[in-house]
Image (cartoon, rainbow over all chains, first blue to last red; front, top):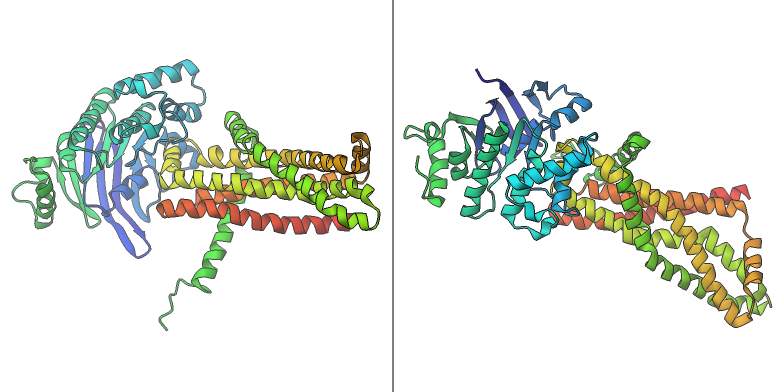
Length: 255
Length: 260
């Protein structure tokens, strides 16, 4: 039986009068890709920000790699974050640093004991893995949207994380680049055996990258399972509506 | 009576109180994070270079013109009493006690404060600060501690440099008009300056540097609402810094005068 790397029970989060997450339950197994699907503003990004400790939950249990996020100490959070990678929607590359320096940054300042040679070796390896070795001395502003996403992923996997959180990895990209990013997510899973949560509203991405899909609507998960289980012909009205709306835009997707 | 229960006095005053409290918390966090092991030396030197060395051309020009013009404008008044020989000491007192730290800090607030506010503000709204946080790097240490320290170290150095350049400008003016030689000028100028003047100028410059770094970082670090927030952060980095600099100036002058 596969080990459970993430366990969320009865999670609530609101901002002022706006209730974003209303009793979310979620489990993630080792080496599993879980896609969290949902419309914009349903709290998908809030969910992974709570998992990474960027924001705190109002109530509920969040256990990440054995750490309880409600009671975690500052030192344990620093330790946990070495094992949890986060790929931001807009890549969040450091503008003032070259691509090489961006990738070296967490190695240099989070793993302070690592040697210069090891940093170089790991940086070159991940740049090779995302197919952008030639960009090492370029600045982020010189790269395309797709390349920036790839570098964002490279900066995450350079730390060999056990859990990777992808926030809208294909948002704002053309269809061909989307497929390339989806393939890269699958390659990362294969190579690093990491568990992943992929936040998206892109059905192609969900179908291609997810071992399991969970549909987040109106603050809680409406349905969970494989892509075809979630969007089968007996799906509830709300689920069907979500699929139909996306289907109009992405006619090529077949269940 | 339909009044929002969350509003304590009025929305704007409440915001100011909350902002002030957050600012105090920010300063407390700075001192709690400040330790030798937390300083990233390469980043500190980089920031000293950005804040100090890159401000030199503007500081040099401003200091030189200030000394030159101040001397030129003071001459007619002193001439009426036949006291032009007092020009070196007058300029030296004015430059060291007040003008050099104040001019340097106002220039630095405009150049450095806005730069730090905009840079950190843009990092905040594009989630670069969050990216540092999730990669186990303390963004406060890396971004704030090093910048504030760099500003606190470099502004005093720049202030004394401004005084030196200002006195050079003044000397050129005096030499061209009164043909006073350099040795006589220096003796006259420094004869009127004591350790209290130098000490108060140093304390002021340190406080000004700390203020510029801290206000710039606070504005940027707490920027919100996209590009609009970046603009506001850059603006706040300048306006709030200058306001606090004037308050410090008034306070230190009162304290120094009471010690004379």
